[in-house]
Length: 167
Image (tube, rainbow, N blue to C red; front, top):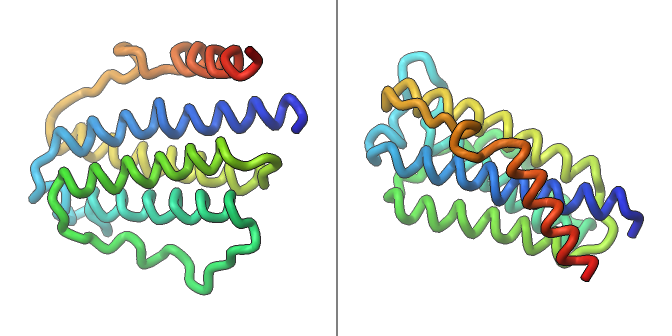
């Protein structure tokens, strides 16, 4: 596999696991279950429903990385449906979805860069929505950048991972 493709895989994996998953954990942990599943007046979907949507997208892409011939007959429009599980169950499912994506990235050679880029971008989009809503509802500022969840930290993680692979 060419070097830039390999680096893209490593960046994507760590962005999802070491940045987005950490931020999702913080959001889920801050809310009580009622707020997690409530649909606000200005929103169409609950925060938990949006998290479910992210998980469906991440799982589908993990499966497609392992078997690129997989096709889905139905889109993901209905995956926003709240499941009403408790926070611990939701967090376990989130962990499993992101872990399966990372494992798929580690266990495949060439990838469809477009699909990987799309799932990373799509996750970032919905994560931004979730963070904004959680900060507003909980009257809390995460300050992720100031606490080390930033591009500099991600770069260091990626560089260490690339270094470990080369050895």
